[in-house]
Amino acid sequence: KMSLKFLNKKSWHTANFKNQERVWQAEEEDKAFKRRELERAKQVAHEREKEMHQHLLSQHTNAYEQKAEGKKTGALAFMYEPPPGLTAAAEG
Image 1 (cartoon, rainbow, N blue to C red):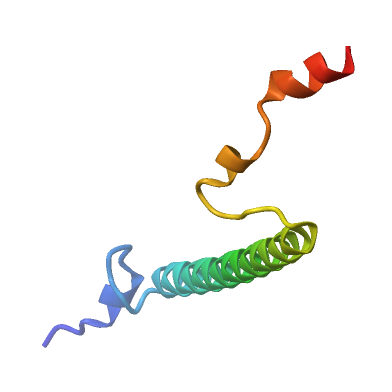
Image 2: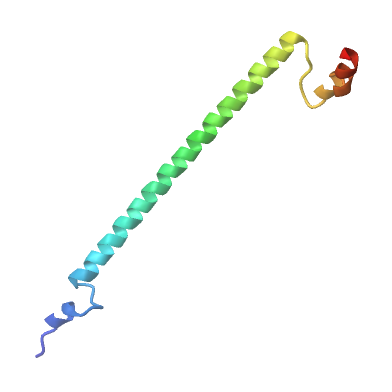
């Protein structure tokens, strides 16, 4: 009978220590990559949420200030403002 113990010394064999080390390193790199991706996704979600809150706050603040000043808000608010050249003509 011939012994097959020499197979784990071959470069292509899965029991070869170098192959096991390569697999372990690749798995560790993959884990680190996934960890970084998850951290980036959390950071982006946090930034988007912060921007949304700032936008809502600025909208609320602007609407409140305009309401206090008697200004109209909305898509047609520009119709209630004087034209840009009118203020310059009135001053000069």
